[in-house]
Length: 292
View 1 (cartoon, rainbow, N blue to C red):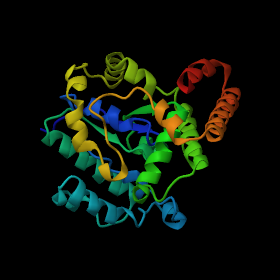
View 2 (spheres, rainbow, N blue to C red):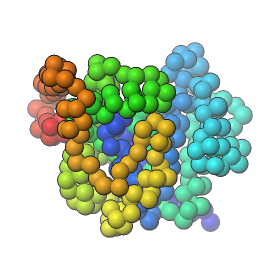
View 3 (cartoon, one colour):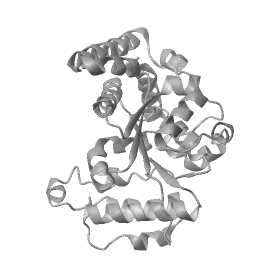
View 4 (cartoon, helix red, strand yellow):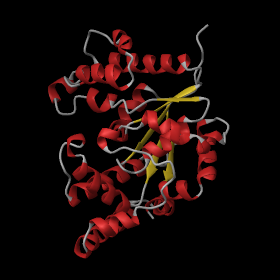
């Protein structure tokens, strides 16, 4: 008899928002299987190939990516045979789900967690293919994210398609926040504030566990560093510290001069005002809390 798995989890957020930390904390749970970033939908959806996207074909980038991922990232090349020869995205997605289900059962786990920050851009398609899936969004202070993005893309430009300027960092954070908040009222979506996560780790993890319908386990906080070593991709600067970092305020002050800092803070403030003005009165209070 096939093992019945619980609904899978997708973890989203702007890059450098702490998604690898949260993934590591959750993946340390005895019932949760997780993997290095699959980037399946990022490479699979033919966003930059409109003719292929229109007829439901995979992007030409997907097959080389899958080969690299299963050969080099998780060392399971034999799993590539489960993907179809016909390059239809829906068929590839079903195979992708089956492979993650297989890996989860193989590890004797109850559910799997997939974390690729940029899958935030493909929520609608993911929900179409996996309507039972649960989505966790991690939101972080804009100044901290911009500082971290700016630093990492200059330090590891090869892993980020070049160095990002301040405006690109700001726009990436704003886009992520807007998308997450658009889904905030859905019952299968759960928004997590990074600052609260690091200040009240146990409390927030208990809330998340309740959302995904598993019992909280203290081992999540005790051993997450070991899990992070497997999940992190060091080549892109994605390294999780053994200690939970509460703020990037020092990084923000060290990286930028006074003029740059004021420009960033003004841009974030203007974004918050505009977004809250556009929100309905019923949801503005909750959203304000996530943007603070």
